[in-house]
View 1: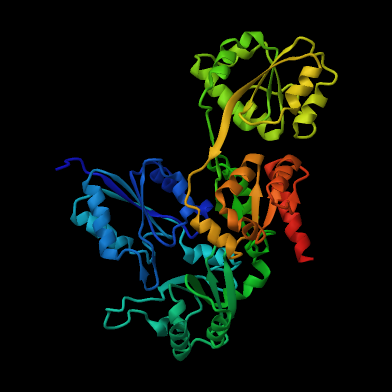
View 2: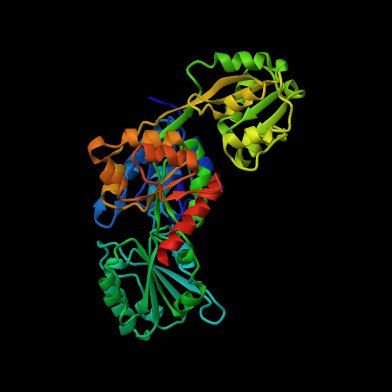
Amino acid sequence: MNKKTGKVYLIGAGPGDPGLLTIKAMECIKKADVVVYDYLASPFLLKYAGENAEIIYVGKKGGDHTMAQDKINFLLAEKGTQGLTVARLKGGDPFIFGRGGEEAEVLIDKKIPFEIIPGVTSAIAAPAYAGIPLTHRKHASSVCLITGHEDPLKRETSIKWDALAKNDNTLVFLMGVKNLSHITENLILNGKAPDTPVALVRWGTTAKQETITGCLDNIVEKVKAAGLKPPAVIIVGSVVSLRQKMKWFEKAPLFGKKIIVTRARAQASDLIALLREKGAECIEMPVIKIVSPSDNSHLVNSVKKINLFDWIIFTSVNGVKFFFETLFNEKKDVRALSHVKFACIGPATTLKLKEFGIISDIVPETYRAESVAEAFADIPLENKKILLPRAKKARSVLPDELKKMGADVSEVIAYETVPEEMDLNQFTEILKEKQVDMVTFTSSSTVENFKALMPKDKFQSIVSNASSACIGPVTAKTALNHGIQPDIIASDYTIPGLVTSIIEYFKGSKS
C-alpha cells in the first residue's frame, strides 16, 4: 500500500474567461499529477497542466452527467490515496453551488489533505460582463444568491419567496433556466412587481455570451422565443435597467466571432490574448510544432567559432531562442558576443533579443527578408562573416542578397517546424458545419500543415466555409499555392498587425 498521501485542490476555475483564473489556481494546475475538470471549466486552462499530467473530464450539465457526483468524489479520494496531487477544476467558485462542500467532506472522511482555491463566480462575473452592476447606490444595497435548481429529494423548499419578493435587493439565480417560469411566478405571487426588470446571461464572460432582458411578466416568453438554453445566470432587480448604458463586453469589435489559431501552441498565447481581448472566441488548432533540428551540429559548430563572426542576423523569435539555448549549452554566455553586431526582422524578434540584454544594431522598416538586405545597403559587407540561424525551410532571398554584397554567409538550421499530432475530427466538423468565422495563418508552414492535415476530398468545401487571414504576403502566396484564397493579408507583418486587419475586415463586413 502506498504510504504517501497526496493532496486535492478544489479549485474555482472561474466563469469562462480564462483570464479570470487566479494566479494561485494556475500554480496548482501546473504542479498537479491529475487534473479533473467539469463542463463549465474552460478547456483552455488545461494548457497550464504538465506534459505528464493525467487529464480527466467529468463534465456535468443539466441532466447529462459524464460522471455522477458520487463517482467524482470516489475518484478524487482514490487519486489522493495514491499519493498524487490533484487539481479539481470547478466552474466558478467551488463553494457557490459547486458542490465543493460535498467533495471536501469526502476528503475529510478519507483523511486526505485538501485546499480550497476560491474562484470568480459567474453570479458576479456574468452580470458584470453584461453591464449589470449587482449593487448601486440608487438601486440596490444588497445581493442575494439563490439556487435555481434545488435538490429534488428535498421535501420542502428552503427558499423564502416572500422575503425575496418584498425587498429591493438584487436577486441572482444560478442554474435556473429550466425553472424560470417557476421562479417568476413565485416572485410575482409573493408581491414582486410584474414590471421588475430581469436579465438572463448565457455563457457569461465568453465570446458566446448572450443576454436577454425583460420583466418578470414577459421574460419567460422572451427566453422561449430566443431559444436560450442553460447555462445562464438570472438577475432580478432594478439594476438590470443600467445594462443599456453600461454594456461593454458585447461591444467589442470581434465579439461573437469564432477564430481558429493554427500557430504553434508554445507561441499562440500572444495572438489568442489579443483576439480574446477584442471579444473573439479562439479555437487552438496548432498544426505545427517548433523543435530543435534532428541535426544541429552546424549551429553548435558556429557557436563554438562565434569569435569568427562579425554579424548575426535573426529573422524570427525562434531563431533567437534556439541560438541562445545552444550558446548556453556550450557553456558560453553573452560575453562571447561582445564583438558581434546584430540585425533583426520585426519588433517581436528585436524584443526577444533584448531579453538577453542585446539591442539590435539594425531593425529594418518592414518585416521581410528583402528589407534586411536594403538596411545593409550603406554598410560595407565585403568579406564580413555573417551568421544566419533560422528555420530548416526558409527562403533564399536574404542569403543571396547578402552574398551579392560580398558577405560570407553561414546559413545554419536553428529549428524546424514539424506537424503537430492531434485529433482532427472536431476541427473538420466545425469547419464543415460553418461554425468558424475565420482561420488565421502566421507562417507558410502553418498553411502547408493545415492543408496536409485536412481530408483531401473535403479540403475545398471546408476552407470555403470560413474566411482566412495571413500575416503577410509570403504566407498569403503560400496559401494561394495551396488552394486557399486569403481574405486578409496584414499590411503590418506582426501579430498586432494581423489582429488589426481582422478587426477592419469584420468592421467592413458589417457596413
